[in-house]
Length: 246
Image (cartoon, rainbow, N blue to C red; front, side):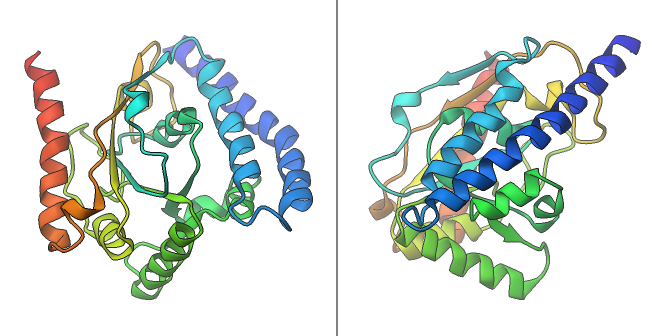
C-alpha cells in the first residue's frame, strides 16, 4: 500500500509539473494557429501528445489498441465509448485521431488542463441543466459541420462497479440529426488501474481500446434514437459478455 501511495504521489506530481510546462506551449500554438485552423486540429494533436505521455511513460499501464483500422476517419462521426475511470480519456487520446470531447463543465475549471480544453474548443456540459444541454447540442452540430468528430460517453458518468450503465440518447440524437456514423469504442482495464473513487493507482494493469465496426448513418438516421441507443448498448454488452465467458 505504501508503494502505491508513493507511486500515486509521483504520478500526480508529474501530471502537475508537466501541465505547468506544457500549457504555455499549447497557448502559443493556439495564438499561432487560431486564425487559420478553426477546427483546432494542430492544438488537438498537441493535446493528444500531452495526454498520451501519462500512459507512454507509465510501465504499469501498457495500452493496446485493437482494430485501429476500423476507426472511421473518412469524415466526422460520433464516437461513443464506455466509461470506467478518469484514465479513459487519456487512453482515447492514444488514438491520435481528431475529435471534440463532450465533458462535464467541472473539468474545464481545472487549472491548466481545463484551460487547454477551452483552447481546444472541447464541449462543456452541465449535468441536469436543460439550457446547457441545448447549448451542447448546438456546439456538437457546429463541430460536426466543420469536420470534427465528437467523442461522448453515453453512460454520462463513470461506472463504479465496472458494469455497463444505462445509456442516454444524446449521442444518438446528435448522430441521427447530423447524419454521421456512430463509432463504438470499448475500453477495458482502466477501472482496475484507477477506480472511480479515489486517486490511488492500483499497480500494474493492462489497458485496451477496442475499435468496433462503425455504424453508417443510413442504418439509423431515420429511426428513433431510443432504439439506436438500445441496439448500440447491446453491441457493447455482447462484446463484454463474450470476454467474460472467454
